[in-house]
Image 1 (tube, rainbow, N blue to C red):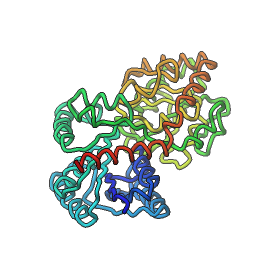
Image 2 (cartoon, rainbow, N blue to C red):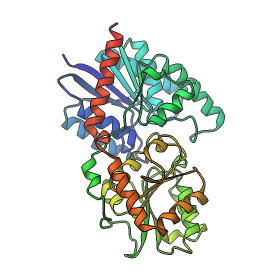
Image 3 (cartoon, helix red, strand yellow):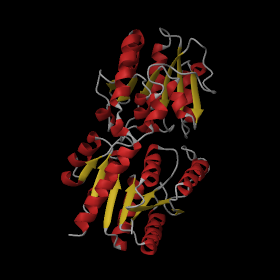
Length: 395
């Protein structure tokens, strides 16, 4: 009989962690594993597609023959009573389904899912943090509290999976997990969808609304503080006088939309900023960007960054989280301090003044995103971790 694996995540939306979970479940070898996905109930206005994204992803699961179930109490927000009820709901599902393995994804689902897995007697537990909340998300006290929780939970976790070597180091340096049970597996993408743009800038999709001579500085991500889009807009504002053709195009929705447009207005570049909202044509959007910037304050790997590199865009990213491991500074892109619009502006200006070097960076970036970043490579590597967990649990 195939080994039953239950994947647990708070939201199955269009975000990087959700897509990683979705592709893992769909891609698993059904002769060896029987996947099922448990997710929370999104709101209609969630930044990464909300209910519409959930419906689309559940349809993809059904087409692939992967069962799924919504656990309404499994939410992103912190609510002690609701979270206790969420643990109980997960225990009931685990006892009913009797999985051999539970694979949790992201911090909140990882906390509730791992506690429920232990209480339900699940033999093997694997957790993929998809980054961390040790800095960049909350204040010092809350960040410290989450760190203590992660240290405690890691002791009962069979294996942890980081998306980059830098993410693994940041966990281990803080006493989260054991080196011998902490793997690094990049999040897989459909390489062909993005690498077809390498070497050229594609046509601009609907919504860009930039003049033909515009130089498009692009980014993809939720419009939330941790993504650092404020820094990007401030940096472009400092360059606009000397580079009047600059336009900012950001793909993604979220609560900061109005604030970011107000900021652009105060800085005098409102007409040069395009916030496209959630898009289903991300490869086409990336292919139409002249320069890609990921100004995040914290990032597990930066799935959109990987996609932009695969598409052959010259890239600039904050020197935080897993992005430090993804970019080889000045060879496949540039790294800058987080939250520093001056440093970001200087990096952008260097590429703008040396367009041929920018093309070289983009070409090198596309080559760097090789088969190790493919979906099959990710799934096979995760399945090898499952086998090690099962071997350890059977000792």
